[in-house]
Image 1: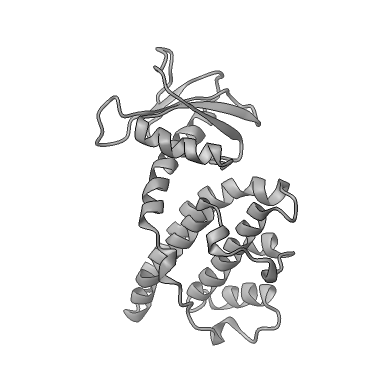
Image 2: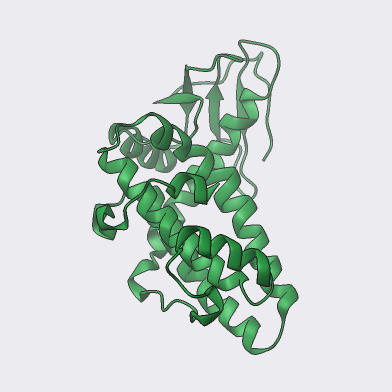
Length: 238
């Protein structure tokens, strides 16, 4: 998927990290988090840990989250869109880094992928592991997006419910009953607006993203509000 997305991308057009939206910077943060753990695992010949770390990253952070959200930007935005160029720059970094990390284990697959992207390169096996900037790690950003991802799980869970209209609610583990994020979806509509009723600290974060034009899901837009959840609500636990 990354090779396909990058097939027409010119690295000379890449965006600076400071120009990237929060979502793309979050992926760079995750790479920085993984960097030390993967290097240590290789140093200790713990290849199972390498595969475990990268498998979780690629399925949970990339495929089910980042790529799912960024499809709209990549497929629908103009070629000159700053958000689109920032996403492609981030995907370029992801591909370059993950392919190098996988190369000692997926020897032939990594080589084939690397040469498909960089045909003038001799071999991925002549590359060293990337030296990732320490500035990519942003703990406060990650903490904020942990809240956002919790809300997104509620939204995507509500969209899977067959009946419409329905309401969904999540009660985070370890919080009081009133500390809930609530979603009012509108069934199976592809382009819909969901009303999210959130606790104050989560509402502030979501409003900032919505006002900035950010998208948390490929299928809907969010409307952040306050209010009581109706009695006929369906509860979604995540």
